[in-house]
Length: 372
Ligand code: ADP
Ligand code: GN1
Ligand code: MG
Image (tube, rainbow, N blue to C red):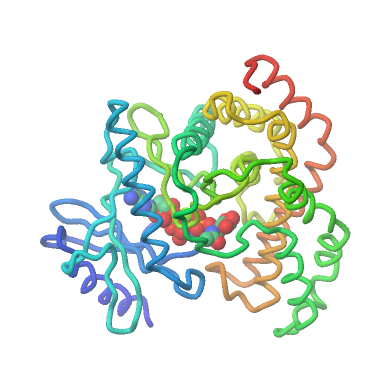
């Protein structure tokens, strides 16, 4: 579908939601890699999203999770004296009172209020914003600590099963459906040579060394809204992958994206490294947000979470490049390959700085006495 037709369709769909009145404007919005997001402006402003059904095979289950989690959070936010309309997402019903609209082509759409007077960043601009995002992601996990995890659907099976993703990657290399493997031999070897990185966290989980918690699982900086006036991270968004997972992965995904000195798709790799100062700042905020509830092992494994999430994302980008760019949205040729290379550079940099990363975690933890 052409852009113009897509917008026209989105405009028609927006009118299927009960709260939406006269629409003044509608436009594509944000930098997410997965869903089609639109800003709908009128008397009130809304976020309309066409859910990516080739990724979320059961959109109704995704919405059941999101409704469950946001209702639960709203109660906690209200009882703590917060603003439940700003501090979590609000799912808006369609005209049939469903938490989504199903169009005649079988596409699922959903609507949220815009979190007003707030912004989300694609790169850290101010240290405080990164600290605030860490605090908020840590708190998010704590708020959901007593959520009935068994009621959550697994929206993407094996989402952070890095070992299973390694097998999918090997299969993509083997099948080489686009004939691209010959262009990326070095990259393929990079991930092969680090197979143990794919296994370490899954093995620890299987051995009962770390607990499963209700986690966000996609803790990029642009999945959090920062209040323009106060600078506080007020709302965690993009709740599609809230599922049982590992605390260290939530920490790690934020590091791979936010503590990098360059954008996720930077082409000049000399600009890409893991910033130790930002790593420290995030560690401080995250431990503070988790409020003493991480185990000693989880704390010790935080650097590993960062490395594994970076490795996993790099491998996913490479897999998608090999498969013909079928998962992540791309905006230029070789976009997934560029993304893969930044992740490789970061993994290698973390490996070089390993002792420093561990020392930072030890010293932040020692200062605050956060561990149990
Ligand atoms: P994706 O899964 O594609 O990343 P997101 O749910 O993260 O989709 O939305 C993409 C972007 O849209 C976000 O990074 C943010 O900029 C914006 N966005 C999403 N929901 C809201 C909201 N309720 N209020 C304001 N902006 C939002
Ligand atoms: C996707 O949805 P978005 O853009 O916030 C992806 C994450 C990746 C990230 C890489 C559901 O996140 O897992 O880490 O891109 N989300 C999904 O930038 O696959
Ligand atoms: Mg997102």
